[in-house]
Length: 535
Ligand SMILES: [Ca+2]
Ligand SMILES: [Ca+2]
Ligand SMILES: [Ca+2]
Ligand SMILES: [Ca+2]
Image 1: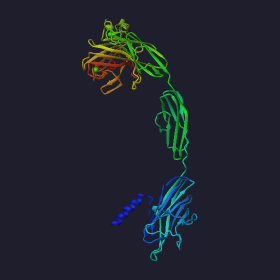
Image 2: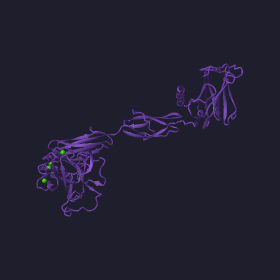
Image 3: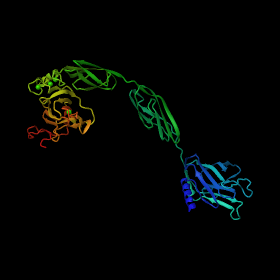
Image 4: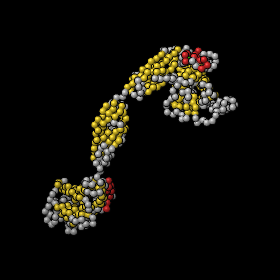
């Protein structure tokens, strides 16, 4: 039983070393035939190693090893060793194709010739014969190695037990394949564009030929190497850059270097000059005042205490606060500041120039004297709007702002009055309050959108702010008059905080997807258009 187990373990080891094979033997010997690989390119070599060991106490004489080499293969004898020592005193024989099996040629390594065995390559117990040779093919093809066998003579054994032999079996068969040589890579590429102003984006296109498995780009700047086939690279700094592409495949490697290939020129710089009228300053983002062509600069007017921003001139116009400008030439911008007696963010001069002689909410008081009423131009300067918070509350920081350029803007909605920015103070912590927005007579809007944070999404985002009975917040629209319902800290309050302060940035819009005429106030039983009335 113990022997049986050992045999099983030995066979498992043999199986794992898959090319190590047994075959049949008439005496106690082992034979293996090992291939260093089973696939090769044409004209490349596959090396075959044969190992024979005599395990019997008797000396084995007259040993020869015989292979049947498939037709079409070229054989190269590499070495023959007895106990690790090269021997040359043996005979290498080659037969004719088909003289034993059709389609193969016998190759024999004859270590000793009977009857005298003068070569003296006797194989004593535990001696090993190692035969190494290689095969190659000049053409593609699959070749089946079927048979090997050996013969020897135990001279001192009893009569009838002297002849010895062994041969391979089905499990010893091996198929090898020769495939077409890979095409040697030749590197080449183009880049586009090859010149321009920093920062320059260049699209590189691989034009290499051959069998390629790996690309390695060096763009000539300090960036790390790139392994894409067709990369895009940004050159941030001016300079002249040499670009190289190394391609590698089974057939070799090649490099294409294009010296001084990419020319990046320094960007043109433009100056932004800012001037002020009145008492205030302008903050620039990015700061500096000198910018590369194409830079977008954000300008924020900062009035001194008691003053308010009142419009742009020079290379900007309108009232948007803040405003952006694109630097494509030298520019000069003037911000006008005027006294703001009621601290709502809109100057006296601006409020006094508003509709109805400066009384936009028609309460016979000048809006410039009312801290809860602010009248001012919309961002493009073509219209006036009036904001009125409840009596006892005050407005601050009122301004016209551009429509946010952030993604997520509602399609099909236009904002003819831009966006409006304001803060209501004195609402009481967690308190509810309303703001009345007076648009020009004849305004025909049907929605109100905001861009800001909500408790369910604290990242600024677009959302429609029509009245909801469930939250009691949102816009009710009645012709040119809009009532905005707020609750401190709730939907619509951009600070989403119970602090008694309502912050709003939003705008009345026209949603083209809402078709038909809108009923006026009288036809809806007192309900406003597009509100949750009746729910
Ligand atoms: Ca004012
Ligand atoms: Ca008034
Ligand atoms: Ca006012
Ligand atoms: Ca608040």
